[in-house]
Length: 100
Image (tube, rainbow, N blue to C red; front, side):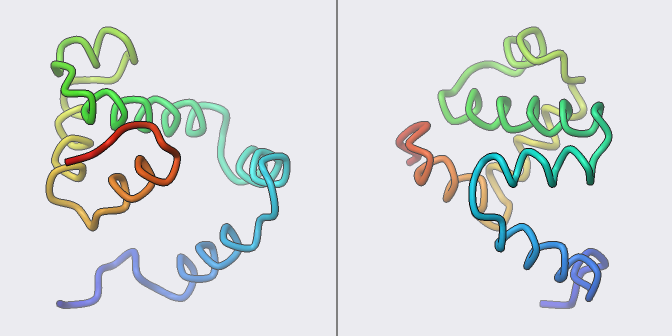
């Protein structure tokens, strides 16, 4: 598989940094400093959309409840179905749902 644009030394360093966070407080502080308020809110909405997709909610319901655009919901759904498995792994780990 060819290396992706996002797979580079800078993003790898960021990933290692995130893995070094010790608790929710550190994660909250780091992410708030790293991201704008809008970006952080957007990521929260996307994670909510993943949870709703796992519960088989309809796209229109997800849009209505999260305020995400239809394009963003479709993009999240595509990665949920055919991505690297990260969403599913974390749903199971966080006991958000049983994913089949």
